[in-house]
Length: 409
Ligand SMILES: *[C@@H]1O[C@H](CO)[C@@H](O)[C@H](O)[C@H]1NC(C)=O
Ligand SMILES: *[C@@H]1O[C@H](CO)[C@@H](O)[C@H](O)[C@H]1NC(C)=O
Ligand SMILES: *[C@@H]1O[C@H](CO)[C@@H](O)[C@H](O)[C@H]1NC(C)=O
Ligand SMILES: *[C@@H]1O[C@H](CO)[C@@H](O)[C@H](O)[C@H]1NC(C)=O
Ligand SMILES: *[C@@H]1O[C@H](CO)[C@@H](O)[C@H](O)[C@H]1NC(C)=O
Ligand SMILES: *[C@@H]1O[C@H](CO)[C@@H](O)[C@H](O)[C@H]1NC(C)=O
Ligand SMILES: *[C@@H]1O[C@H](CO)[C@@H](O)[C@H](O)[C@H]1NC(C)=O
Ligand SMILES: *[C@@H]1O[C@H](CO)[C@@H](O)[C@H](O)[C@H]1NC(C)=O
Image (cartoon, rainbow, N blue to C red; front, side, top):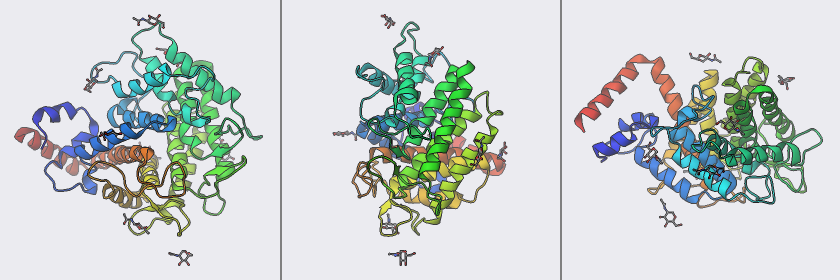
């Protein structure tokens, strides 16, 4: 049981409101989401296990959505971020990641991290931009120049396919579905913070990259995306995690566009992005297994169950429904969420995951899978809350339960 001080310390976190109502319940259920205890264990494992650029970049996005949701692009009004943070909104864990990356930046490349990838280091860019925006030392330009160099690398130095698609790799032109979560959201976010003449062009570039990647990677039959195309080797499988990266990345670009001052001008782009996410989500769930999971290679029934890709696609499903109000895939996402809840060990590790480095064999732990569980929790939470707002009796029951709980603790 939690003590009152722990409850009050956590009460600023939005997901707690719902989790509180299950304190004392034997086990989490769909209607309650993950428990506070599960969330904190999954988070601790995520931070403990994440070391690679894309793992840390994804973790920094997760922390924004989980703890500082007003500053995530899924927040109601994330632009511009506040220049001065306070104790209730100090972003300490996000800024710690950004500071560590910028302090250890290589000197031989414009990139934030030198790991052979174009897309992956860019996933850290939003955290670095926030560190610049909110810095207390106003004459410190390190974060701004690190973010600017990263953008310049992606746009001006990285190799491109003949159609203009930016390579995911530095040494050759190779397109990975993963790129969509890593680079376009950073390009778009950079644009909105920059404002002025640069903004519209950067938003358009982020959109164009999503469009070009879809042209290159989409399987015409299923509408799912293959994992890796072009270059000297390919991964033609319709990788669950890759489809999740694409859907979740396009959603972040879409949210960034919609919350910018150019939302109206870019309505056609928003409409397309929404449709492209819907294509992936709709196609993926047609292959859902009876226990709620997706297979690692979604359409290949000789493949194995992968809970990490399942979690990421389920999170995108709730986010999409919040945008379209189309609830047709919610039952599939709910079933997947139940499977994910049942796939967490007592230590908060997600089980039955693909090895995220081989893509094609079962693994034992997945740093990115830890992040996907929390992306699922936060997306579900926003979805759940929206249904409570629409249904007043349920909301007041929740409020009553909460005040009863506070009163009695
Ligand atoms: C983090 O990993 C180390 C070993 O690498 C382990 O000793 C520690 O318990 C882990 N922490 C958490 C929170 O799991
Ligand atoms: C940031 O805020 C959290 C509470 O939201 C607090 O626990 C933490 O100590 C604060 N960190 C700093 C560096 O002020
Ligand atoms: C850094 O932050 C300041 C505001 O604090 C802003 O004017 C500047 O454009 C930012 N730089 C970048 C690259 O976003
Ligand atoms: C602020 O940043 C500038 C430029 O990097 C640096 O020279 C200065 O020492 C910093 N001030 C503090 C108080 O850290
Ligand atoms: C949206 O997609 C359609 C079909 O691919 C394309 O013809 C159209 O130009 C796109 N709209 C924008 C604004 O890019
Ligand atoms: C779910 O079903 C798949 C087969 O459809 C199976 O491989 C997997 O082990 C099952 N997962 C769990 C957690 O039972
Ligand atoms: C895999 O799918 C094929 C074609 O849909 C079907 O004939 C076969 O029975 C399935 N195998 C398994 C193990 O489900
Ligand atoms: C979905 O519903 C919300 C709230 O009722 C509304 O503001 C929004 O415009 C709707 N979106 C669509 C695409 O219909």
